[in-house]
Structures are given as C-alpha cells and as structure tokens.
Length: 310
Image (cartoon, rainbow, N blue to C red; front, side):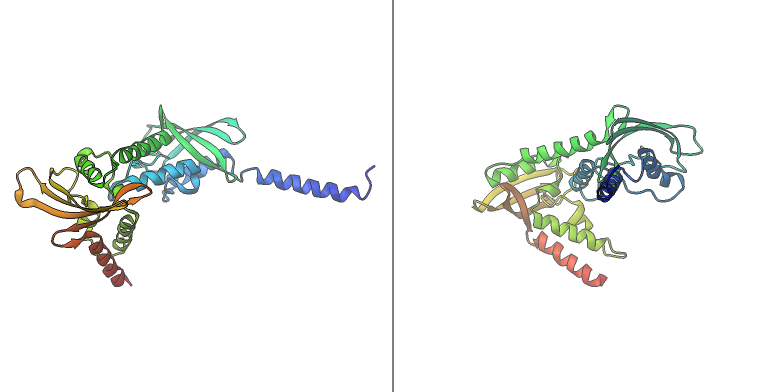
C-alpha cells in the first residue's frame, strides 16, 4: 500500500506525463490535415496561398527564395498551384487518401482527386508530411517522378551559381561580364543590385500597389533591366566600357550602349556605380546621361506617390 505522501508525487508525475503526451501529439491527424488543406478547393472558398504555415521550414525557404529570384512581373518556378497540380479548378472532389507512415513524424499521403467536379479525370500525387511545431506540414509533393522541393531548390541554386560565376576581381571586368550575359535569361538582374537599390524597388512596388496609383513609371523602374534600359529580347551592343574611378570597395564606370542592331539613334550613355557587398561587386546606382541618378528618380517618384496616398 502506498503512503499518503506518495500520492501527490504520483499525481504530479501523471499530470506531467499527460501534458508531455498532449504536447507531442499534433491537434490534427495527418488525414485531418490533408482534408483541411483540400477543403477550400471543394467548397468554392478562396484556397490558402501555398506556403506559410502549411509547409515545412525548408519548403517555405525554397518558396521565398524562388519569389525573390523572380523578376518583377514574373511568377518564378512556382507557376501553378501544387495542391491541386493545376492552374484552375471547380468544386474539387477529394476521392481518396492513402497514408503510409514512415515513423512517428513522417507520413506519405497519396491523394486522388478530381480538380473539376463535373469532369471524371483525376490526379494522383503524394504529399510528404512531417511534424514541425507540433503540426503536420507539407515537406514535399511528388507528382510522378517530380519532386516540388527539388524543382524549386534546383532552380534557386542554379541561379545563385550563375550569379556567383559572373563575379570578377576587377569591377570593370565584372560589369563587362554582366553585359556579355545580358541575353542569357539565367540570372535575375534584381540580384546584381546592392541592398539599398533593391530596397528602393520594393518601396516603389508597395507605393504603386495602392488603388489608383500612377503606374506610368513601371516600365522604367520595374520591367526594364536598368543596366541597359532594355527588355530580355532587345539586342544590346556594348560600345564602350571605361573605368572612371575606383577604390577597393567602390567604382564608377562609364558605359556606352546601342539598343537595336541598326538603331544608332537609340544610343545610351550612363555611368554605373558599383560597390562591394560581402566581398561581391553589386550595382549601387545608375547615372543616366543627362537625366541623372535612376535610384534618386525612383525614390522621388515613390515619395510623391506615398504623399498622394495619405
């Protein structure tokens, strides 16, 4: 027979054990999580944007980096909805869920569904679920042989590797490498810009997102590559590249360009300011001749719009 003094200790132990067990059990099971994810697709409500709390930390990181590496106006590698593996749907019908547990914190959920209720065509894909922060989340999605995470991460790493390969020791050599690879379409020009420049672009994007905002400057500040004031399809000839001044961490370089194969009247003269950021050369500003600093123009336009939006 246990003594009376032992009972309080046993009660405390039981409470701690129950609390620990409860903390270690996700509030929704893997199947309940799957049904919750697909429910908005079935009842005509607005689906949750893929990412955030419904995916794992590594998947979320890959999604955000993919978005950051996309040029303004582009959607990046994730140009469809991975949950329904579709661009569109109507009253999605979730037909079957098959769970294959790997261990206590890993489950493969194979789902079969019809994106359109009125259509008998179905899609089957596997969602790899893991437990993070005591919730089941999507760590990867497999459709056939394709892994969504490998697709996103592979594209991200390829772009980062291309950007790293463009670096040179001398600032003029780096800038020349950028112009030699303008038409590659394998690297985003936004990522050769210094942090202050990129921050200014984000500020402009936020300002023009307001209802009724003036978007007449979008072509200049968002959609044209500032290195050449050109689009991806335009022919650009580098006529002159001359170092004006440099220090170990900054440089000013004059460039003369021709846009178009036979359009000498489309000549563009500008001075490009470079700075070292964490050891890499980046574009800090572009001085168009004779209009002046492109960065200053963007900031002034943003300030005017922000004032008008108040």
